[in-house]
Length: 493
Image (cartoon, rainbow, N blue to C red; front, top):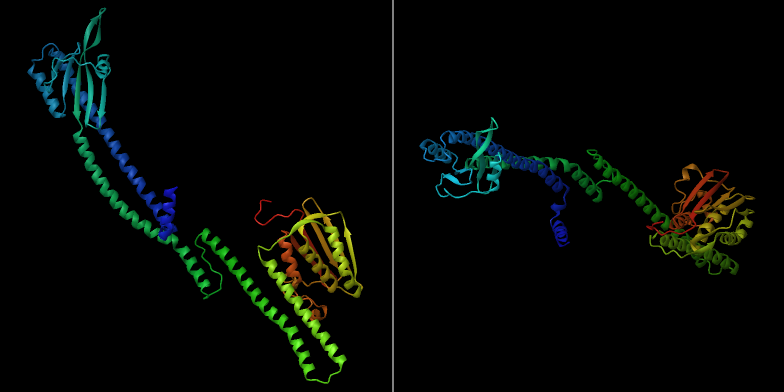
C-alpha cells in the first residue's frame, strides 16, 4: 500500500510519468529490449549446452580408446607401462583435468595427480559404471565436467564370450575454454544489445512522438476554444479514439453554445419582462403627477392598473424563483404517498372558474385509482400549469380533457384541448423560458412564459417525461409520465 501511494504521489509531482507518450515510450522500449535480452541469454545457454555436450562426447571417445589400450597392456594389474602413463598424462594436460583408473576392487591404481593411488573409491557414479552405465556431470560452478567410462573386456561364459566391466576411468575435464568463449560472446552480445537499445530508444522516441501528435492537436484546439479564439467544431480524424474524443467534445461544444444562447436570451427576456411592468407603472404614476386635480375615479382607475402591473411583476419574480430552485440538481423533494386522483380533482376545481369565464368545459376521466410517491406541491404545479395553459390557449366554447391512467410502474396524465394548437416550428422551443406560441395575444392571455419550463423541470425531478403532440388550429395534447415509486438520481433503481 505504501509503495502504491509513493508511486501515485511521485506521478503527480512529475506529470511526465502520467503522460500517454511516456507509457507508449516505456511499452515500446520493453517490447524492443526484452526480446533481445531473452535472445542473448538463450543463445549463450544454448551455446554452453552444445559446447559441454561436444566436450563430453569428445573426451568420452578419447578415453574409450585409452580403455582398450589399458586392457591390451594389462594396466589394471601393472601400471608401469610408460606408453599408457604418457597417454594418461597427455589427456590430463590436454583437457586440464584429472584421471583416475579404478580396478574391479574399487581401488585406485592410477591418479594423474599422484595423490590418491591405492585408495578405495566407491561412489554412485563408479558403481553405475561397473554396471555398464557411463555417466557425466557438468559442474558449472567449479567449471569442470566429470565422467566415468567403463573398461570392458571379453570373458568366456558357457562356451560363449560375454562382456564384463573390469575397471573404470574416472576423468574430469576443464571447461575454461568454453567459459572464455562465452565471455567473449557475452561481451559482443552486450555491445550489440547496447547499440540496439540506443537505436530502439531513438526509434521509440520518434514514433511515440508521432503517435501522440493527434492528441496534442486536440489539446491545442480545445485551448483555442477555451481562450475564445474560435467556437468552431474541431476535427482530428487520425485515430478512432481521437474521432470519439473530438465527437464528444463537439457535442459538448454544441451543447454549451445552446446553453450560452439560451442564457443570453433568458437575460434579455428577463430584462424585458421585468422592465415592461415597471415602465407601465412609471407611465401611470407620471400621468397622475401631471394631473394634480385629477378626479378620484381617475386615481382609482390608475391605481388599479398600477396594482395589476405590480402583481404581474410579482408573478414573474415568483416564477423565476421557482425555476431557479428547480434548476438546482440538489432541489429538495418532499416525497410522500399522494392520491393522484384527488390531487387532479382539487387542481381542476381551482381552475374551473377561469374556464367558465372563457366558456371552456373541463373534464376529468380517471381509468383507475392511482397512488404514487411524489412531491405533492411540485406535482400540483405541473397539473396547474398544463391545465391552465390548455384553458388560456383554447377557443371559446372549447373543452379540456384530463385523462389519468397507470400501469405497474408509471402513471400517465394526458391533458388535451381544442385550442389553437402549436406549429411544427414551435415544437423545439415550447419548453424554453419566456417562449410563447401565440406572441400576438401573449399580453391579453397573460402569464410569464415560464410555466412550461417550470413544468418540465418538475417532471424531470420526478425522473419522469413530458411529451407534446399538436395540430395547429385543432388542439394540443401534453402527456406526462411519472414513476409510481420515486427513485433518487444515482440510485440503484
